[in-house]
Image 1 (cartoon, rainbow, N blue to C red):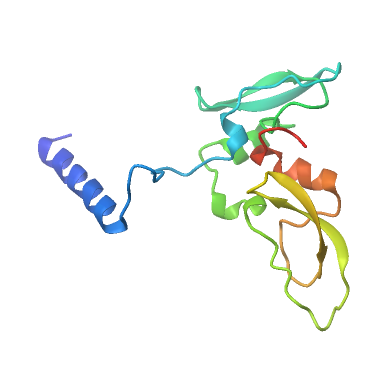
Image 2 (image 1 turned 60 degrees about the vertical axis):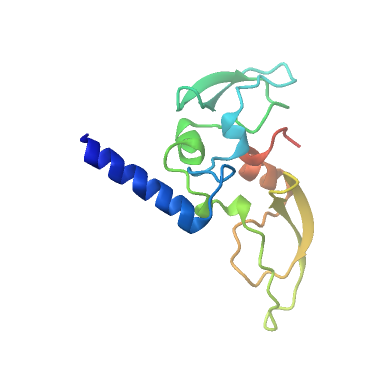
Length: 158
């Protein structure tokens, strides 16, 4: 890289920081789910299951043994899901667990059902009355389904 290219890149970087008002607290990368930065955790039971976790230092998914209960959210049943949810192609805009259900009123289908959604602020699955009109992806029929789908955002499994 030539000196001129380096200076141009630095100028662009500082210009963008100035225009956006970015300070030192702004993340200049896409944040992965919190669990992707955790180490593997065997858990609290006595089972022995093959699972995969994302190793943030090596930036790849590795195999580990899981007891079957407890542990943390960096725990995936297959390597493809680990790569998709913690690897380089992770996109928070496509992550259903980060979007609250819209729960719009539906006059043609006035039926409520108790469902569960993941609250990313509390890192918990929460029950609510769902209107069943919108096509939300952060809506689950059971707490277990919610936890399984969004465990990567939990420091500790619920």
